[in-house]
Image 1 (tube, one colour):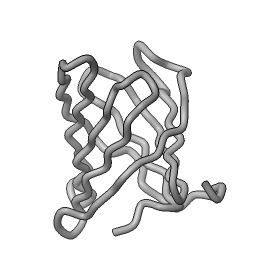
Image 2 (cartoon, rainbow, N blue to C red):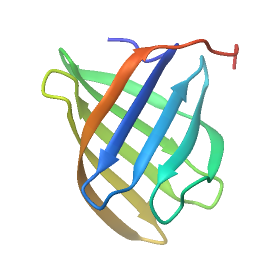
Image 3 (spheres, rainbow, N blue to C red):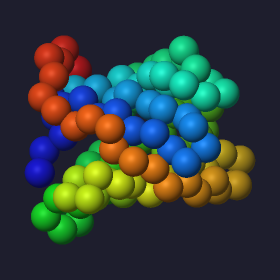
Length: 106
């Protein structure tokens, strides 16, 4: 399963909602709701299919935070871990959208 050229929207159990747009080498991220609403950025990312319809997606951010997601597209659920300054925060969430999107060649 490929994420390049796709858009992923998900909501975590704490009410935060995110949109990810996957380019060839970068993911453009936007927080749609929650404490960081209206924040955005672009980072390099990696993605690997663990088993059919289950992906591990991870990206480092400029402030030394690392976000990792295990997304189960068969059940539309995900587990998210963001690590910052040695502390990990784990959250469960639901996939709201995973579809083709127009991308820049980045």
